[in-house]
Length: 254
Image (tube, rainbow, N blue to C red; front, side):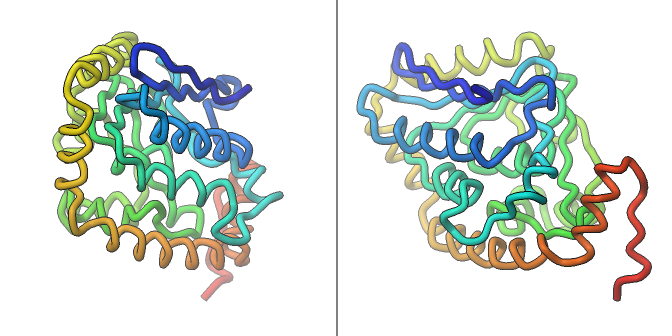
């Protein structure tokens, strides 16, 4: 299994476990994460959910070869099911991020309540570089978090940035040595399990009050645009160039 799901002491843990591919996410992995999130959110014994990779890699983002072979066709696609599940989760979400956090590896953090990063974490939002558009309501949430100019820099140029900059932007709560990231996230989750569950859910709901409809609307708009762009010639060129380890040539496209 490339996604390991467990539950103990009121904490549900979703661990990406595909180290040979730096935890690049395939459609079955998206489905597994979506199912795990929904199950944990519905399970009364679960008080908190932790998402992590390894101390070397959170996730390299979408598995581009898998995306080329199986592009999402509609809202029932596993990737969109995962997005809906993480955006709609009512329980506290804690993320431990080390190594690369590319694309969805960064955008999913905008829906987490506590994020702890290793000092080796590298974030990137390379949508424009792949001839795609933002996802997971990041075109709404990142400007709210970091301001328009900084969000534009990250979403348009798509250049990587480190853990300290992510903390400065407000994307990350704390930066730790990579090996301490997952234990620290689990320790923080354990603190949450000792607090009243109803209070935590109410606090999360109130903090997101008024955002739910806007997030859903923006995700729908992004998903429509994303699907159209995913099968366009520019994206084919970008993906093929990535797989062939060469620079893409967008000069032939208007």
